Length: 391
Image (cartoon, rainbow, N blue to C red; front, side, top):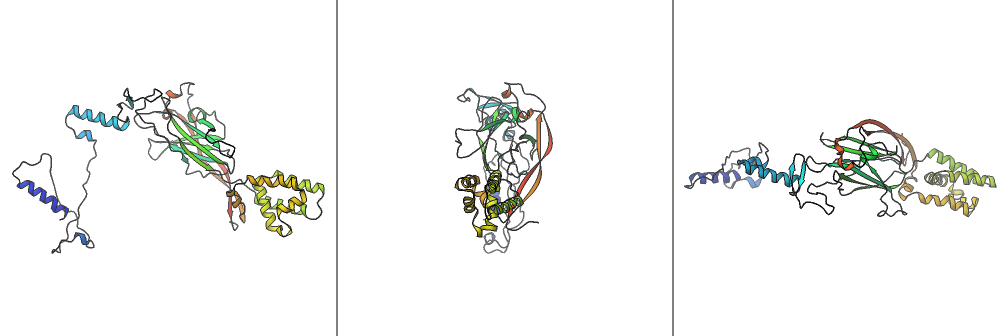
């Protein structure tokens, strides 16, 4: 039976009934279109006429549930219950734009916790691609329209290596309000604040400009509200891009080392070769080895020639530096061609216009802080790796 026929039957049965109509219920039916001819389920047996297409109910106006209640006291009570449930976890009352918690809505530290403090979601800034030394992070402000007021965000960052206990060592902590917006932090870190897709939302950003290449970094963020509560942590772990190498310079050094190794090597030439190889970075040394073996391996590879010309001790001091290059970067450094390019990216640099009094951090609302922002540019050098020279 088609849906509209079913509804019409209900309406007819109700009209013919001797009982009173159900109070507050009305049914209005009309046809709006037909089922497509390809739908075999819509055909009615014995009739060529296709059944009408059922239409979803249409919403003409959206109103809160409590607005449907006519009696004033009941409506206000229902409104208060809904507001409490949505903004205050059902454990307090909404007073203007904050929550007054019930007596049983306090945590183990004696702080009211009926209004939840959402954790911020830390992420890489989509408009700034990480380089070997520059990383930009951002997050949306988590302060709700009613309830918890965010006082600060604390960002911790550290370089992770085999010598660091990641659980015990938390890294350097930066207060967004006290360190970054106030300008007290190093010039290697800058803070920004901008509007999201919705004008009422704010996006906070932090750009790190002095990180180490090919380093594994862990960034952790949490929010602090005006009562001192901490939100759950949000973490981003990433490895910075490989160190920059001057490929032309690496090829020149490879040629120079070959000429120093070729034939009889005097003590002066040995020392020159040793000093040259120790002065370059580990990634440049890896590239020098690549070029040397590409051009002169028929005369002996780089490792064997270094041990033969410089002796095992000096050769070991040079070659063990190659262990600092990660497996990822060592693969890229074996590319046929490496070209360098410079990119200039804009970032937002913001400073607070007011000084937050010491000891009063918890009583200030970060969103109300007046800031002055300007757009600055950061230059980022990058390597491009490939099997053929780019144009």
